[in-house]
Amino acid sequence: MTERCHGDTRPPTGPRARTAIVLATAALLAATGAAFLPSTASAGTTLGASAAEKGRYFGTAVAASRLSDNAYTTILNREFNMVTAENEMKMNATEPQQGRFSYGAAEQIVNHARSRGMSVRGHTLAWHSQQPGWMESMSGSALRQAMLNHVTQVATHFRGQVVAWDVVNEAFADGGSGGRRDSNLQRTGNDWIEAAFRAADAADPNAKLCYNDYNTDNWTHAKTQGVYNMVRDFKARGVPIDCVGFQSHFNNNSPYVSNYRTTLSSFAALGVDVQITELDIQGAPANTYRSVVEDCMAVPRCNGITVWGIRDSDSWLASQTPLLFNSNGSKKAAYDAVLAALNNGSAVPTTAPPTSAPPTSVPPTSAPPTSVPPTTTPPPGGGCTATLQDSTRWGDRFNSQVTVSGASNWSVVVAVTPPQKVSATWNGSPSWDSSGNVMTMRSNGSGNVFGFTTMANGNWTRPQVLSCTAS
Ligand code: XIL
Image (cartoon, rainbow, N blue to C red):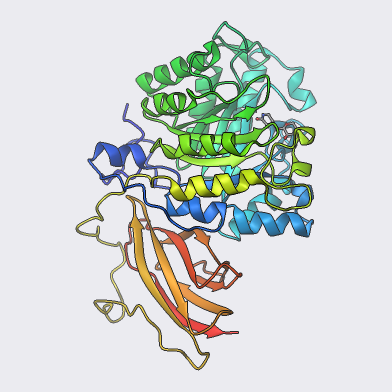
């Protein structure tokens, strides 16, 4: 069984011929001797921008019903570059009647996110909770079959649109046993989890496949050790698992603990990415939020953090006021602490760019490209200039920074070369043409330097500035 390495430059051979995605190449890069960037301060002004500058993401849970709330979407679109559907991809939402799938609300969220350059985490394919009624009353091989069909159908439907799936959610018991939670799915046989992962793998070979749970933050807890042992066993036997999600709902009963970093790094050492998937902290103490972010930033394979909602009033635990924004949408002290910790944190490891690009399958039909594309465009009468600079580069992607001069309200058009794709942006409001290759970035009050991440998809051509227009 081959290890699931992403960003591997060898031609794909196994059933999981995955393409690299924004989420994760860190362990491979570390394994290939890549250097770690020094911990340099940067100056991102939003959560998503600051995380992206460090090769990571910052996400939130989104409820489709709130997408019509302007105050909500303003914060969503400004701050986050990853989205999880809070309820809309769960089994009861996507298969309300057996064999009849319903994707409308989930697609609303996916489309909102992807049309704005945000990525999507899928949550969740198999879970004992929020099952449709027909499934709750099923058991045995009929249930096993229905669960696998659900995983296959839903993962296939969202193939190419979801960068990571919580394939199985919350399968371990609380308390001291360290064993599995009793559920109708567990009673179909202990191998139900790996069966779900194999079905998801077959349906979407390119999505990262995660196991997700809560109360797995404290390294000394039996539940944490139980999950750890399962992941170790899966890796040893070649079960296709890529990542472990830590919900990290911290409250007085299950508080943040200082060995959290040990937990994250111990799982990462098994050869999986780790992600903080549903973060909220009772009372939102700035210091605790800071510690959580610092712990993630200290672990190269901790490639992203998702908070479970935007404003306190959006939270499933609203009375705990556990989030980064007040109910009126203003930033809380915890927000400032998180932003600072992102900006002070380390970037995920970088790697040298490939020395020779692999040949493209289609030879150029027109004139060969000029050797160095111009980085500065002359002002086309609109009165501004945009200069593109290369920034951090990883095994599968790179950042670019564009500095605008001559105007404070501007609109800059940038083109990437297919199959490149822009996967994150910061300090501007992006829109795309129908090809998805031409991005128009408009100033959004965040200053005159914007940035973006390009997934190379094998092509390392530098993006080109096509125009700068003052408005
Ligand atoms: C919660 C949602 O936030 C609520 O709106 C819903 O009523 C119940 O589920 N662990 C998970 C999430 O994996 O899916 C849960 O989300 C919170 C706990």
